[in-house]
Amino acid sequence: MSTTDWNQEIKDWIVSILVAVVLAFFIRYFIVELYMVEGPSMRPTLLNAERLVVNKFIYRFKAPERGDVLVFQYPRDTSRDFIKRVIGVPGDTIEIKDGKVFLNGQLQNETYILEKTRGSYPLVTVPEGTIFVMGDNRNNSEDSRFRDVGFVSRDLIKGKAMLVFWPFDQLKTLP
Figure 1 (cartoon, rainbow, N blue to C red):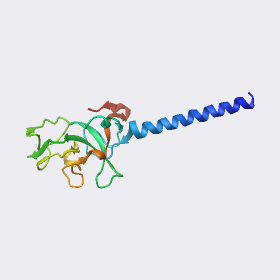
Figure 2: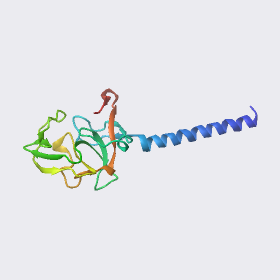
Figure 3: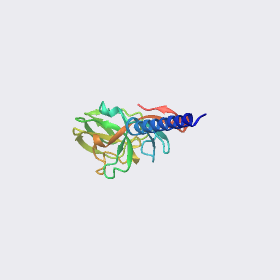
Figure 4: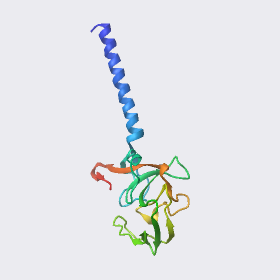
Protein backbone atom coordinates (compact mmCIF):
# COMPACT_ATOMS: atom_id res chain seq x y z
CA MET A 1 0.00 0.00 0.00
CA SER A 2 1.12 3.49 -0.73
CA THR A 3 1.28 6.30 1.82
CA THR A 4 -1.88 7.82 0.33
CA ASP A 5 -3.73 4.51 0.76
CA TRP A 6 -2.56 4.27 4.41
CA ASN A 7 -3.66 7.84 5.12
CA GLN A 8 -7.09 7.12 3.64
CA GLU A 9 -7.34 3.89 5.66
CA ILE A 10 -6.49 5.76 8.88
CA LYS A 11 -9.04 8.50 8.07
CA ASP A 12 -11.72 5.86 7.45
CA TRP A 13 -10.98 4.22 10.80
CA ILE A 14 -11.05 7.54 12.67
CA VAL A 15 -14.36 8.54 11.07
CA SER A 16 -15.85 5.09 11.86
CA ILE A 17 -14.72 5.28 15.49
CA LEU A 18 -16.04 8.83 15.90
CA VAL A 19 -19.42 7.88 14.42
CA ALA A 20 -19.60 4.87 16.76
CA VAL A 21 -18.76 7.01 19.82
CA VAL A 22 -21.32 9.68 18.90
CA LEU A 23 -23.98 7.03 18.26
CA ALA A 24 -23.22 5.27 21.56
CA PHE A 25 -23.36 8.61 23.40
CA PHE A 26 -26.72 9.45 21.78
CA ILE A 27 -28.21 6.04 22.62
CA ARG A 28 -26.90 6.12 26.22
CA TYR A 29 -28.17 9.59 27.05
CA PHE A 30 -31.38 9.81 25.06
CA ILE A 31 -32.71 6.33 24.23
CA VAL A 32 -31.81 3.60 26.76
CA GLU A 33 -29.64 3.25 29.82
CA LEU A 34 -28.58 0.27 31.87
CA TYR A 35 -29.29 0.23 35.60
CA MET A 36 -28.60 -2.09 38.49
CA VAL A 37 -31.27 -2.72 41.13
CA GLU A 38 -29.96 -1.84 44.58
CA GLY A 39 -31.85 -3.12 47.60
CA PRO A 40 -35.01 -5.13 48.27
CA SER A 41 -37.72 -2.48 47.75
CA MET A 42 -39.07 -3.98 44.50
CA ARG A 43 -39.10 -7.65 45.53
CA PRO A 44 -40.45 -9.96 44.18
CA THR A 45 -40.65 -8.16 40.80
CA LEU A 46 -37.00 -7.06 40.85
CA LEU A 47 -34.18 -8.48 42.96
CA ASN A 48 -31.05 -6.85 44.32
CA ALA A 49 -28.22 -6.68 41.74
CA GLU A 50 -30.41 -7.46 38.73
CA ARG A 51 -29.51 -5.41 35.66
CA LEU A 52 -32.20 -3.53 33.71
CA VAL A 53 -32.65 -1.79 30.40
CA VAL A 54 -34.47 1.50 30.98
CA ASN A 55 -36.22 3.27 28.12
CA LYS A 56 -35.39 6.97 28.55
CA PHE A 57 -37.27 7.99 25.42
CA ILE A 58 -40.83 6.78 26.08
CA TYR A 59 -41.93 9.49 28.52
CA ARG A 60 -41.05 12.24 26.07
CA PHE A 61 -44.15 11.19 24.13
CA LYS A 62 -46.52 9.81 26.74
CA ALA A 63 -47.16 10.14 30.44
CA PRO A 64 -46.31 7.38 32.91
CA GLU A 65 -49.18 4.99 33.47
CA ARG A 66 -50.38 3.13 36.54
CA GLY A 67 -48.38 -0.07 36.91
CA ASP A 68 -45.27 1.18 35.09
CA VAL A 69 -41.99 0.36 36.81
CA LEU A 70 -39.75 3.38 36.42
CA VAL A 71 -36.49 4.96 37.47
CA PHE A 72 -36.47 8.46 38.92
CA GLN A 73 -34.07 10.75 40.72
CA TYR A 74 -34.46 10.76 44.49
CA PRO A 75 -35.93 14.22 45.24
CA ARG A 76 -33.65 14.94 48.24
CA ASP A 77 -30.47 13.91 46.43
CA THR A 78 -30.79 13.86 42.64
CA SER A 79 -27.45 12.05 42.29
CA ARG A 80 -29.28 8.91 43.52
CA ASP A 81 -31.81 6.95 41.49
CA PHE A 82 -34.82 5.02 42.81
CA ILE A 83 -36.89 2.39 41.05
CA LYS A 84 -40.58 2.04 41.96
CA ARG A 85 -44.00 1.23 40.53
CA VAL A 86 -46.48 3.95 39.52
CA ILE A 87 -49.58 3.64 41.70
CA GLY A 88 -51.29 6.95 40.94
CA VAL A 89 -51.20 9.54 38.17
CA PRO A 90 -52.41 13.17 38.26
CA GLY A 91 -55.98 13.46 39.54
CA ASP A 92 -56.04 10.00 41.14
CA THR A 93 -56.85 9.61 44.81
CA ILE A 94 -54.75 7.24 46.90
CA GLU A 95 -55.51 5.90 50.36
CA ILE A 96 -54.14 3.01 52.38
CA LYS A 97 -56.48 1.60 55.03
CA ASP A 98 -55.73 -1.50 57.09
CA GLY A 99 -52.87 -2.36 54.74
CA LYS A 100 -55.04 -2.19 51.62
CA VAL A 101 -54.43 0.25 48.78
CA PHE A 102 -57.41 2.15 47.39
CA LEU A 103 -57.09 3.95 44.07
CA ASN A 104 -59.96 6.33 43.29
CA GLY A 105 -61.97 4.59 46.00
CA GLN A 106 -61.44 1.11 44.54
CA LEU A 107 -59.55 -1.62 46.39
CA GLN A 108 -56.53 -2.63 44.30
CA ASN A 109 -55.77 -6.27 43.53
CA GLU A 110 -51.99 -6.09 43.54
CA THR A 111 -50.81 -9.57 42.59
CA TYR A 112 -47.18 -8.42 42.50
CA ILE A 113 -46.83 -7.89 46.27
CA LEU A 114 -45.99 -10.70 48.69
CA GLU A 115 -47.34 -9.36 51.96
CA LYS A 116 -49.96 -7.00 53.27
CA THR A 117 -48.86 -3.37 53.49
CA ARG A 118 -48.33 -2.31 57.11
CA GLY A 119 -49.92 0.89 58.27
CA SER A 120 -52.23 3.43 56.74
CA TYR A 121 -51.89 6.51 54.55
CA PRO A 122 -54.44 9.32 54.46
CA LEU A 123 -56.52 10.07 51.39
CA VAL A 124 -54.56 12.28 48.96
CA THR A 125 -55.02 13.48 45.40
CA VAL A 126 -52.03 13.23 43.07
CA PRO A 127 -51.22 16.77 41.86
CA GLU A 128 -50.72 17.69 38.19
CA GLY A 129 -47.17 17.10 36.95
CA THR A 130 -46.48 14.37 39.52
CA ILE A 131 -46.99 10.66 40.17
CA PHE A 132 -47.41 8.54 43.30
CA VAL A 133 -45.00 5.59 43.48
CA MET A 134 -44.53 2.62 45.78
CA GLY A 135 -42.12 -0.29 45.92
CA ASP A 136 -43.54 -3.78 45.48
CA ASN A 137 -41.97 -4.76 48.81
CA ARG A 138 -44.20 -2.25 50.60
CA ASN A 139 -42.86 -2.93 54.08
CA ASN A 140 -39.28 -2.25 53.00
CA SER A 141 -39.62 0.63 50.55
CA GLU A 142 -38.94 4.34 50.78
CA ASP A 143 -41.54 5.75 48.40
CA SER A 144 -44.26 8.39 47.98
CA ARG A 145 -45.68 7.58 51.42
CA PHE A 146 -42.58 9.19 52.93
CA ARG A 147 -42.02 12.94 53.12
CA ASP A 148 -38.50 12.77 51.60
CA VAL A 149 -39.89 11.19 48.41
CA GLY A 150 -43.51 12.38 48.29
CA PHE A 151 -45.17 12.95 44.94
CA VAL A 152 -42.53 12.49 42.23
CA SER A 153 -42.27 15.35 39.74
CA ARG A 154 -42.31 14.29 36.09
CA ASP A 155 -39.04 16.11 35.48
CA LEU A 156 -37.30 13.74 37.94
CA ILE A 157 -38.34 10.65 35.95
CA LYS A 158 -35.47 9.08 34.01
CA GLY A 159 -37.32 6.31 32.21
CA LYS A 160 -39.38 3.14 32.18
CA ALA A 161 -37.80 -0.19 33.16
CA MET A 162 -38.40 -2.48 30.20
CA LEU A 163 -36.20 -5.56 30.53
CA VAL A 164 -34.24 -7.52 33.12
CA PHE A 165 -31.21 -8.83 31.24
CA TRP A 166 -28.93 -10.05 34.06
CA PRO A 167 -28.63 -12.57 35.47
CA PHE A 168 -29.33 -14.06 32.09
CA ASP A 169 -31.42 -16.94 33.49
CA GLN A 170 -33.80 -14.31 34.95
CA LEU A 171 -34.34 -12.58 31.58
CA LYS A 172 -37.82 -11.01 31.48
CA THR A 173 -39.75 -8.04 30.21
CA LEU A 174 -41.55 -5.70 32.60
CA PRO A 175 -45.09 -4.35 32.20
